[in-house]
Image 1: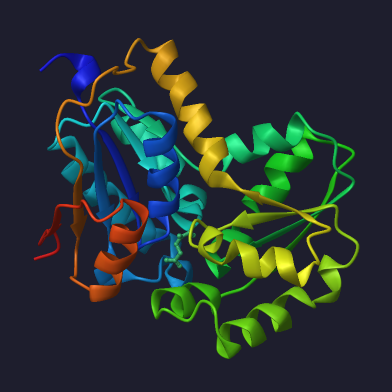
Image 2 (image 1 turned 180 degrees about the vertical axis):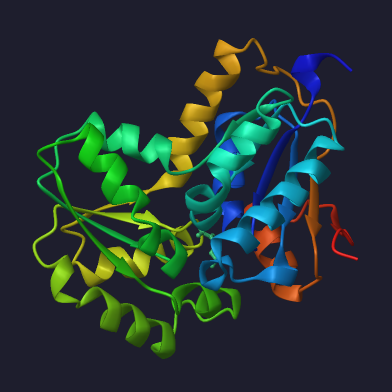
Length: 268
Ligand code: DGL
C-alpha cells in the first residue's frame, strides 16, 4: 500500500473522539479512519497518569498494526498524560498528534482576555492548558474547572434532559467562569453537549471545541509530510474494547449509519 493510502488511527476512551473523527471525515473525505474507543477503561479522566499511559501505548501499537500513518490522541486526558511518551516511543514509526496543542496554537492566534477551560479531573489537575497558554499567550488568563460528571453523563445518554441541564448549570455557575470571553471544551466528549453549554451562557460566550481545529491542523501535518490522500482507499473501521449499544448508536449518528464496528480484545 502506498504511504498516502495508509489510514489515520484515532483513539479515545469512548465516544468523545468521534467528535474529532467526524470533523476529520468532513475536512478530509479522502482519508480512511481506524477508530478505537477504550470503553473497557472509561472514564480515563479518573485514572492515574501511569494507567492512561499504558492504555495509550497499547492502543497505539494496535493502530500501528493497521499501519496508521498518523495516530491522533483524540482525548484530552490522554493528550495531557501520554502524548509526550507516545511521541518518544513511536515518533520514529508514525506521526503522532494530540488535541491540546492545536487548541493552544489557535488561542495564541486570537486575543482573549479571560478564558475558561473545563475538562476531566486528569486534564485539569495536569495544568496542561494553563501552562501551555501561559507560554504562548502572555496576556490571557486561564481559569480551569474539573467537570467529572459530564463524561459518565454523556456516556449514559443523558444529553437533553433535566439531569444533564442541572449538572451543566451547576458546573458552569462556578465563580471561576464568571466574565469569561470564551470557554475551551477541554474534553472531546463535550461537543456532544455544546448547545446546552452555549445556551447556559445565552450564546454570549464563544465555545471553543477542538474538533474542527484539530482536523485542520491534521490536514496541515499530512500535507507537510506528503501523506494527504485524495481518494478513500477503503472503509473506516471502528473498534471498542467493550461493546456498548450506546457507542454504536452515537457512532451511527456521527457517521450516518455506515459503520463497521468490532470488539477488539486487546486487554486479555
Ligand atoms: N474524551 C476524553 C477527554 O477528552 C476522555 C474522557 C474520559 O474518559 O474521562 O478527556
